[in-house]
Image (cartoon, rainbow, N blue to C red; front, top):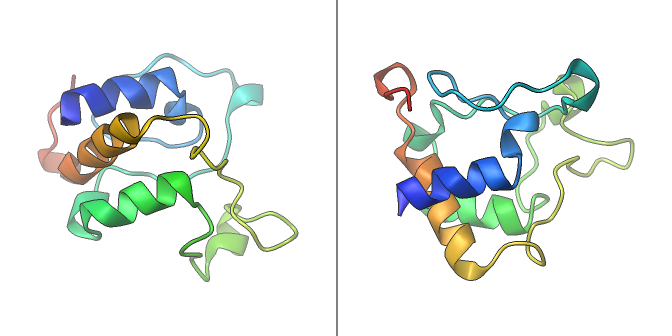
Length: 110
């Protein structure tokens, strides 16, 4: 359920690190902003299973450019927290569905 997944995105404060062009989320103070990829065009790049795996195991796939983009720590691992103990299976599924629904410039603002 992509709509429920968007709610999870907000509740888990994913917007503090990940931008979604065309979406409106609560404002984030500069000191609270993290580093994460922009997500609005990800649907065309990955299957829904990729998003679910990335949420519960952020180190499953490491982008070779991640270090220069600031996505990786000094240890070479993702700065993204592991949500496997935070979110339920339904929340992960819904959040993955939301991410898979993003279509970049075609995506409608909520």
